[in-house]
Length: 317
Image 1 (cartoon, rainbow, N blue to C red):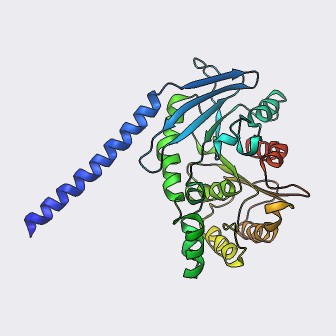
Image 2: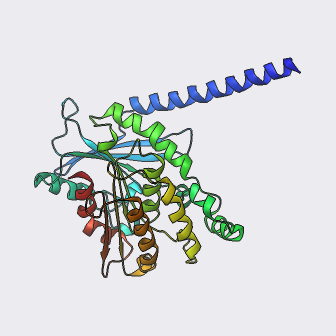
Image 3: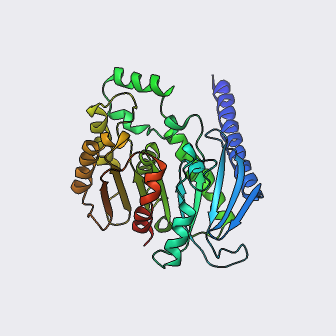
């Protein structure tokens, strides 16, 4: 029996060591990778890193926007915003519905007007597993109805994958970005931002990795999770999780907003419950937390483009 234990222990250590070697190899390969495409214009430069592999999630494309004045041989260092649904940020030809966020134009303007300091944007493209990767795992611990969990699993083709997605971001992607570009790597200068399910994964990232992200901007956060039903128990589960998981106020910034048309019309009751959680936790409106309501705004890239300067200014100013 002791011989079998020794053999099992050897295989366990070998497996852990092999996984570590694979992870280090992936990080080294990404760090040394030359962008497969570079687009330079008056609103900065976009490096496309191509199809980036991971030990945790499926291969995906990564775009890195560098602001006007960024120099590879320079010494100035920049804050970084990690944004989900990266194909929707910069190029209308690649964006959903042909409408992009125009993040490069908005940030270039804010920087030129000296409203915010320089910043780098990392655009993480989504995959066919988007809904599962953006759906927080730990929220499910507070869903007590197994039939409701089953409905969500059926709707999205499986259980949540957000924990694996965040490991990719924090353990693989961020070290690569910090190693390749002139960044300010501390949490005070590292932010995360997204819309709809991208808003949901952004607040989850802040709660799970407060030592990595100093702020989260969550536009039109899809609190109901499901596209088919609106169940108040989901909102209640979200609030119970956030009540225990959010970092203490004072060192992080949180931004929420929502419109009143199309899918956004479902969000206000959920957002009000979340706002109550932040008040109970001691967050101060206008200082380390901001929630905005936009009358008549719909759930699409055009609406987010029109108000993107507000969360960007709140996080970076």
